[in-house]
Length: 354
Image 1 (spheres, rainbow, N blue to C red):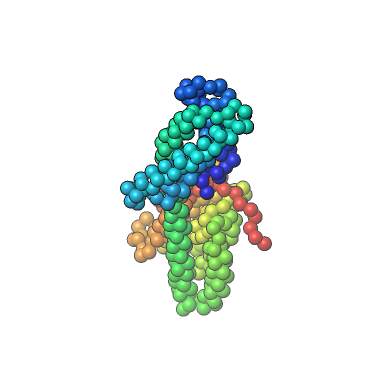
Image 2 (image 1 turned 90 degrees about the vertical axis):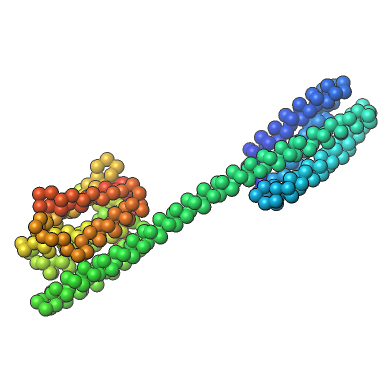
């Protein structure tokens, strides 16, 4: 649809502009051949509005003959359309002049009418050309807007694909670490390995439920973390302790699903597991202004060598946050403690599903 016809306000403004042009045309006719301004306006204003409606056709001619194609052919097409519309306008002016003369009782001065029609024909060609130029400009703006829209849609699609790919990396990462834990117990504690298998099944079911969603509340994410820690406590027993310092209002904040899980795994696998005496995993969360801040801390053995696979979970979290935007992960290691701190927008969601 023509952009001017898309909104009534635009059409009214467009017709008002052509009516104003009719007023100017009436003044020009009075200069060329003396007559009353009222009669000149009655003759010129309707014809100006009519030609404004005719010039709307330039939009479709421009769409059919874009400048990006054969420029010469487009120019000839526009010239032909301008001559045709000017001819139609001259015929309409002749008919209207004759009818107006009879209706007004003033008679028809054929010589004057011929001059008026010739003037309208001469003006019609450049007016149509101007309308075509404006139409080409509107089409260029429309194409530019469409290109920007396509670029934005492409960016959103790429971002969603990246997030899906990152999520796909998480499930194997969880399973790999959990199976290693079960394998460590098979020979020494078969009953514990069985309980870990049961816990792992429950954990994976919940992982699939939450992982399919765009976002989850912090209390739902914490429930998943508790399931994982319950599995690991079968293996570590009293060597693994957990402390929580979570503000009640923070539990309603939303965050991407499975975001804390790699951080907790990292704390257990590369922190607590590397110490003979074990250690405590501290989880804290609170709201500061409009930001949600979540931190995980665990003791580390400063003399222990780096272990294979260390940092994979952290890198996945960093990439997910970078794809989301407006969030970040900070990692520090001081005084025998390792700290991973998340900083996200505080967005409050609805309660978890029953």
